[in-house]
Image (cartoon, rainbow, N blue to C red):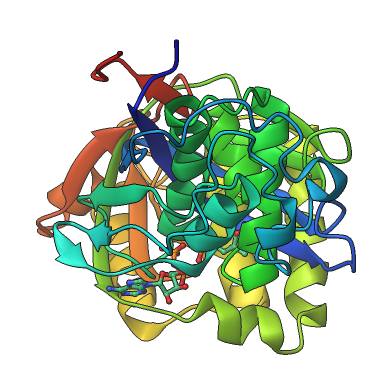
Length: 331
Ligand SMILES: Nc1ncnc2c1ncn2[C@@H]1O[C@H](COP(=O)(O)OP(=O)(O)O)[C@@H](O)[C@H]1O
Ligand SMILES: CC(C)(COP(=O)(O)O)[C@@H](O)C(=O)O
């Protein structure tokens, strides 16, 4: 018995600092770094057309990490129906027609292009919350369930990671979002290649967005300076895996990597002046603000942005990571 519809929730992920590690093999490519996952995230609903679920056990098995390059059509060996043969199903983002490249690549890899896919999020897209990675991972989890593809969690994370890296829209968001909490990416790459740790902590998160920053443009440019700064920041956090050190390393990274945009710099100073930083006399729960990579976005742990007079969105660090949610119907 296979399900026809499935829904997944994937937390947003704000990168505090990172180093870029490109590679030809998308499972090997990725980033080192650290960030926070958010209770605000992306919900992906996948509906399989009738008769297109199950039995595609060999689907794409020879190319699990090739989602970004291939269209998956030659791997669609489903015995009882090929979702790709009838062309793509509907794609919406917050109810409007629209698609995210990494999502399309995930669906192709799973032989699920015929699915109707609805991506819903309160987070802004392209502003440093890893929405594209979250949508890709949510599509992988939900399509696997709706089409009864029988892939494991690690396999689905690998497929979403490969799609995201292949599209140039992220390097480390997917593995972080799969984990939840405060992920520390010790080694780059998909499950089986990369290595994760975490800062064991929770906090209130505030954020304000001033606009988008193209991840493709930054990753496609010279990343030597940001990678050197990111490696330094990771060394500092490994020596002291606590939230104040994460935020301090994030602020220094943005300056050293020359990524700090003026609106973010202004907000970080305003939060600091108001007492919301560990160097000043504010509450110990206020850990100041930093810029979200890669977006014109500032995030604070505690109440620093609201104390400084901004009107932030508020959520918390997500404890669970990407997951299916139980609102599906079964036949
Ligand atoms: N309304 C939209 N605004 C920005 N990007 C969009 C939108 N709809 C789809 N996209 C796609 O979503 C992806 C955003 O990727 P990225 O810049 O990495 O953002 P994020 O930080 O949210 O992951 C791009 O591939 C872009 O083409
Ligand atoms: C910083 C970034 C390379 C991009 O993040 P975003 O713009 O949110 O997709 C991220 O994927 C990472 O590896 O840390």
